[in-house]
Length: 466
Image (cartoon, rainbow, N blue to C red; front, side, top):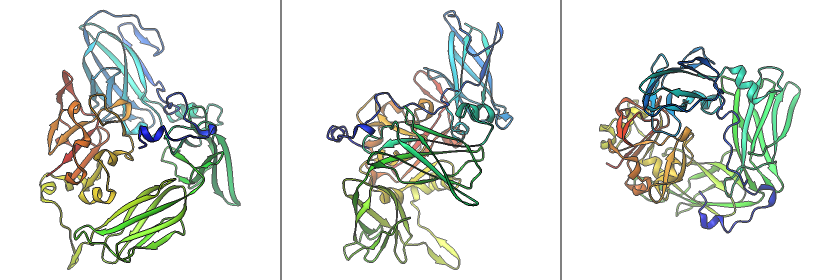
């Protein structure tokens, strides 16, 4: 993340200066797929809702996935502008209690929406005082989603979307030329579009292909090319970062994580490039004249686990710390791996093996060598860092404005006083990150009293220090 001090020193060409307006969410953000069933009968979602009486009411409803013709389980339904939310059951049903009477907007969030590249659908509803209203929410059909992306399309076909941002401010870029290339029976085919005023681009009516390669550029700035694969619904998305054309330097040091001694002769490779070198007696290595961009660095050393890290080469040298761990000891076909007893007893590794969420253990943290704990969260999908409204430093925000619930050593910690960077990275033994209700295990999915009422967690972060 670029500091404010650094931002004031950078001057960008006019072609890629940050947009004056705030970044616009996905093209389908707020695509409406809901109806309100109230005392007056069936009403269109866009109908003007009159001001209601003072008091509180209840909302009952169902969330349905029209793309799969089934109820949507574990969706988080919430009343916009409030902390009122609930999680749907296996039948897609939910109940929202103590909702202020009058006109309200109800929406929902679920990992399925991210798969479809759409934002949370919403609906307006009139909440009766001391009464109950019914509401129906739904994921739009594939046809409707496709039509919203590609209104002039000749039918449902493959769609590739994305956005273009620049390296310095991470701001979205308008007018970048985006090129999409794919293989055919006779060679290569390609298309070109320009990113729109919100930095977004869309390719519609694409032929079937195993994958597509996409790249963007404007002026002297260019992105690396990236492979895009379609999901099961026929949608693909990629975020492209523009770098000014130039060459940078990568330096680093390879160290044994247990003995803390340098490793001589470790092979360092930039995947997908001809760049490679070996570490010297001090464990140091150096690569020069690397084109600006983001790379995967792979480090190998006999008797140690290979390590892979992501680096961004730009106008300032990158100094990478690589911590190598010995391979597991093989004893008669059994792999012996030493694990911290505290995390083992807390069930950390059991949950990690279930592949629900994102996990960092001590080895992962040493490998990344962050200056502070918040750096670990910068590349986690569906989460972003923003300046905290309650204290110095940063806070995490998920989709639809979700603020995670926090646990420290298994104990709930009030979010308004929780600060990620209160913990030194080397004091942290492990971190668990659950980005949606569907990922949260039962031991961290308890309702808790915050903001004056009961709340179902929409995301959870668990920090272990012992």
